[in-house]
Image 1 (cartoon, rainbow, N blue to C red):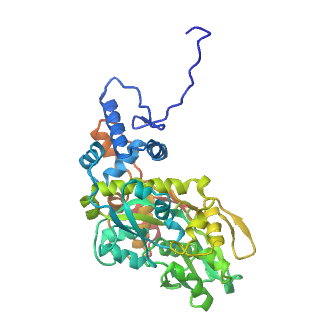
Image 2 (image 1 turned 135 degrees about the vertical axis):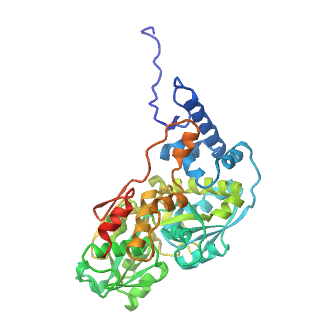
Amino acid sequence: MPKDAPKKELHRHSFTGGLCGCGAHQAAPPADRTPAIGAALDEALLHGLFPEPMLRRALIKSVGAATLLGALATLLPLDTLKAIAQEKKPLEKTKLAVGFLPITCAAPLIYGEIRGDYAKEGLDVSLQKVAGIGLIRDKMINGELDISQQVMPVPLTMTAGLGGTTQSIKVLTICNQNGNSLVLANKHKDNRDPKNWKGFVFAVPFEQSHQAMQLRNYVASYGLDPEADITYRVIPPTEYFSNLRVGSIDGFFGGEPGGQRAVYEGVGFIHAISRDLWDGHPCCSVTAAESWITQNPNTFMAFYRAIVAASLYVSDKKNRPGMAKVLSQPQYINAPEIVVEQVISGHYADGLGNIKTADDRVDYQPFPKYSAAVWLMVQLRRWNMLKQDIDYKALAQQVMLATDAGRIMRDMGVTPPAADFGKEIILGQVFDSSKPEEYLKSVRKT
């Protein structure tokens, strides 16, 4: 090249499954062109499923092309995905009933309406506020809701048949990570050592909830017997602070803005935010019955695009200013704006005279992890809510919208990524989701 030739601007490519994170380039063809052909098919499929360039690039940058396609393939057969991508078929139904809980976890569902993401996909979504987790689960079982928010691990327990009717449920996205608090009544300000909590009565939103599992794990780590030493009461999140006020409970572990509302009302203090117990834990999920997805594949894909777009929007910290004003409205969370603001911003009063900052007090990354699902189900077995051992990893793969990329990539001649059963750090301890049986042996009572 001549010395005076203009230099081309360099772009550092980062390829996943043959596709660059920018969404516009693919890896150079190897000697064997089969992998390159597979990558080109991936790219064409993604273009068809996610025609909007900004959303498609954001998804590829977030999780990678192969991961995204593998995740979708756990919900719809590859042939169905190809058909949706190749031909803009009419939606099977346009009017959807979508259930949500009046807590900050619901932000993606709410913002799908606020931003017009549903309407953009041709959907007429009726958001239905439901007070309690048991009720919203029953409405989904009864077919009153097309899509609904469900606390984890309820979609897993429904699919496994734990607690009643067995129904195959799929997790489209995770609504949020963190976003919960362990709160105590003000009378316990000088009694913050969990070793002294024998006889306490705690509220949880649902018997088979991550809150109930995390609370059990927490008090057990301090030497208490969670089954004999603690009493649990199922109370809707909107009623936590009123129960603290009348003294019917000693504390609760629940979704926000319950914890911050207790501080605001002067009836309790935040002993710990859930991030401090298990950073990145899933709280709620966006779910649909497998039968509904199969019957309405084009509608499902339209809703999926909308909820992912809304999730990516609320997860971006630049978009957080003003969110509290929207979410606090009566038709949504119906709470004082200052209360919701402290949750969304992570700058909050703890009720003990301290102002704390936790930027990731709540987050809204949409893609779930197998490892979290495995830990939650293992806890249900640990405390004998699940009466027999199951294949925890197989259940996670069946329910969670997570990577089945290995099979898809092998079908297309592309080398698959490593398995996704990773590790979680919970109360400072490493949980290896690839070895759930070993963990159970170490913690189960004889």
